[in-house]
Length: 252
Image 1: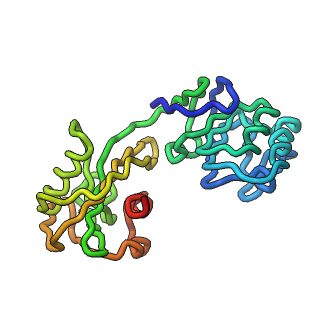
Image 2: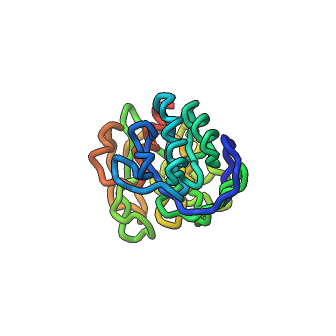
């Protein structure tokens, strides 16, 4: 899989990922004399350091330069959004850096190659659709049966493989197959999001639909269903990323 981003500082490198989940501030976030993240002790020197967004004061630029000075700088940095502190720091330290990348794609120990603005990652990419059905303030969730191939016993939306169809057509097919509903009203397309599961990368196309009825006919893929208030999804054992998908669809 090849991922394009925005070059902040150019370079061609190859190495293993150290992933930090969330925003990262170099000031207070890492010790330049040891190269270790203060929060968890992981060493970022010689790695491809991945995080969501950078933040912090201008002193952070000198922390980044300090990593190079003490011999602990990352091989490269990949982030979703780069602030001026990061831009200045990686330029001073000459660390290849790419921004505007969906960092949900990566996990620890991924082996990747960076060539200018292109990141090469070896994963199995699988496209699926997930629909959230909405009725009078509640959403539908379904419990996956033991007969499905993935995430047995987890709660999910109406989901399935995209296969050769366009995403919306695939979503409509899955709704009819899994609930018996034939004419849902499309409220919103939520684009797509990525979820990593080992060497597999799920590319999930998201849809929000309004339905007029709450009684549905589930098929063999599910054992039960419930209509719940969206904020109660946190009380259920769900497939990865379902809460994020619901939030994205309802709040966009």
